[in-house]
Structure formats: C-alpha cells, structure tokens
Amino acid sequence: MANFGTERVYQEFEPATRWTSEPDAEILVADLPGFKKEQVKVAVTSTRKLRLTGERPTGGNKWIRFHQEIPVPLTVDIDSVSAMFKDYKLYIRHPRIKTETPQTKPPAPVKPPVVTKTHDQHEAKQSQGSKATTVQKPKRDQVKHDAEQKAGEVKSGKEGLTGEPKGALSSKDHEEKDKVGAKWFEKYKEATGNVVKEAKSKRQLLCNLTASIVLVLLILLYARNAVRSSLVWNSEE
Image (cartoon, rainbow, N blue to C red; front, side):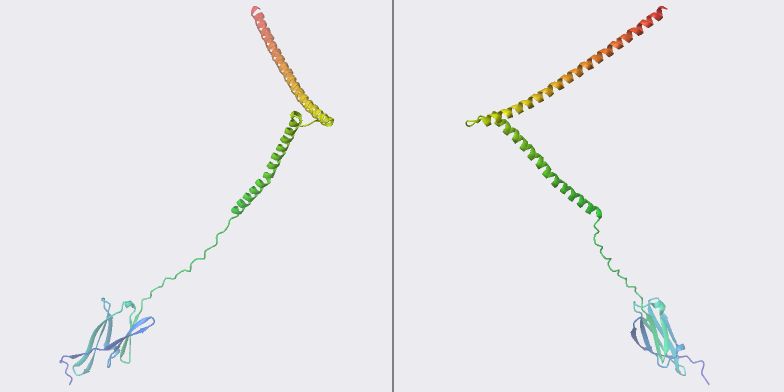
C-alpha cells in the first residue's frame, strides 16, 4: 500500500545555464534532465531578474527541485520575454530593445549667387556716362582752341595797327595798313551808330510813355471835376 502520510524529501538541483546571442535577441538555455514542461515555471521579477523554478518526483517520497534567479541584461525588453521547452532544455528568449538611429540628412546643395539685372543695367549706365564724358571733352577743347585762335587774330591785328615798323615800309604795306585802319574805323562807326540808334529809340519810348501817363492823369482829373460839378448841380436842385 502507498504511504500517503509521509512527507516529501527534496533534493536541491542547480541546472546548468548559458547565454546565446541572435541578431535581435538574447537567449538563455537551461539544461533540465528528467523534467517535463508542466513541472517548470518561468517568471520575471520587479528587480529585473529571471526566476526559474521546478520540481519532480524521483521515487517514493523523494523529490528533486531547483530555484534560480538570473539577472536580465539591460539591452533586452523584459515585457516581451517568451519561453519554449524542448528535449529537456528550457529556451528563454529576450528580444533586444530597438534603438532608432537618427537619419542624417544630406547637406543641401549650395546655390551659386544670382547676379541681378539691375547690376548690369547700372554698369551699362556708368559705361554710357563715361563714354558721354569722353565725347564731350573734345568739344570743350575745340571751343577753347577756337576762342584762343580768335583772340590771337585780334591781338595780331592790333599789333599790326599800333606796332612801330622795324624797317622802311613799302607802298604796299602802307596800302594794307590803310585798308585795315579803314575796316576798323567802319566797324567802330557801325558800332557807335547802333548804340546811338538804340539810345534814341529808348529816349523816344520814354517820352511816349511819359506823355501817355500825363494824358491819363489829365483824363482822370477832368472826370473827377465833372463828377463833382454834377453833384453840386444835383444838390442845388
């Protein structure tokens, strides 16, 4: 007969464990010879440890059991732990925490500086202005040259009239001098005649203006007296 009143006698067992790595997870493998899936328990504690427990009978009131806590790496996600029992081995899979690598954006291409049309127009205006100034310079020089040439001709003419003869003058020289003197006299006479005419015309204009003013004043006085006399006649009546 079976003895149901006897207590169990436990023998402690420490299973062999090892870690293996996969590209996306860390796997803990525990060797449990003679154990079945329903005789093993797996739990994750609040202190981030993996707790493995299990027990099985060996005959009579003798039992074998194990209790082990293994720290979980910080690089795994404890909320996604999964376990699988196969061929007396316990496989506990710990998925790694996915870290998103920041995507570096390629540097934006540097755009070349755009030359605006206003700059070109400004340069064109400046070049046109410089051309205009260079064109105007010869005109000023030409005017200055003509004025100097005329002044030289007038000066040479005066010197020919007032200068003393260095040697004996011929009849031709006397005739030329007389002609030049006659021309200058005619010019002088013409100029003085014009001045006299202008003075006479101005004097005549002034006289006419004075006579007009006097005539207007006389008309005003006459009209004033006529108005007064009419008023006197009206008052007497």
